[in-house]
Length: 110
Image 1 (cartoon, rainbow, N blue to C red):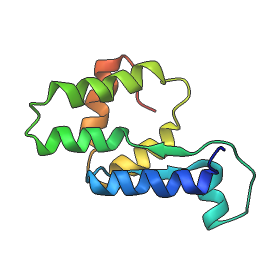
Image 2 (spheres, rainbow, N blue to C red):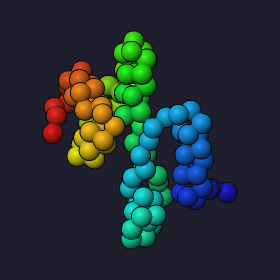
Image 3 (cartoon, rainbow, N blue to C red):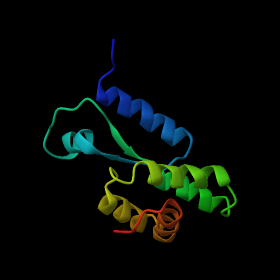
Image 4 (cartoon, one colour):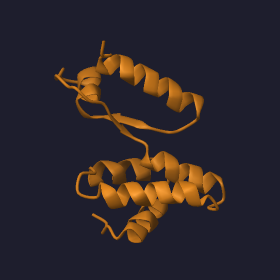
């Protein structure tokens, strides 16, 4: 039997917390929890900035984390919510790394 989105959120949050990965919950689930309830079949998490933060905490030497960030920006450049990503990057002090990652991915800043 399929688990509902709220159970999936609970499990994902537990994993992110256990691994100290910063994340943001978005989309219909966030709207339903904080505003107007909406129906959904998926869960939207933003973890790109978590990879960038991990890269920074490792003194910028982790190629794996950097490739993850650049890869996500490259593959999903047309579907990412750039305004939300910018806002979150500003909030956690990663604006410079986001700009650098966008440049490496060939994505232009908003």
